[in-house]
Length: 177
Image (cartoon, rainbow, N blue to C red; front, side, top):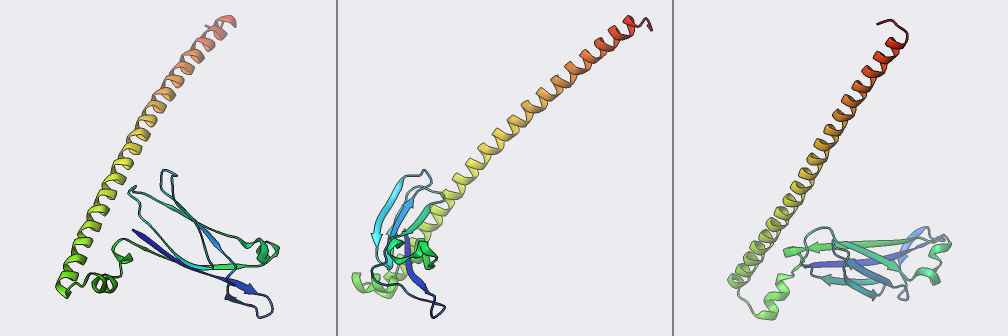
């Protein structure tokens, strides 16, 4: 689970500082997984919170686009975006969960530990996946280097044989041998 909080600020040239954005300024949030599949695409206000869960390990793309044409951002104006992203177990508000589910302190701590163990398992699976991908890349690179060196050796041997034959015929033509 990933939770993102953001807030925007517009630059005020008269005051020469950033001011909170007007409510009409909106942000379009788009999230893609490592396979470039769209997970989330939604319009939000100048401040907002987005949440998504992905079952695909790897780097995800989070793009924030503004509807800034009417706010003259493209006419030299500047926009500042504050983005806070929480991933995994840190994204959960356990005080809210305890109040909602009426959990005792011990039950809440057990739930936290279970979620930590699940997060550790997910991280281990991701690291295994990365290691497997790295190994495939390394083996592929090693094979390409091997074939490239064999090709270079064959080319050098062929050029050497050609040079020897060419020099032999040259010296025979000049009657030096």
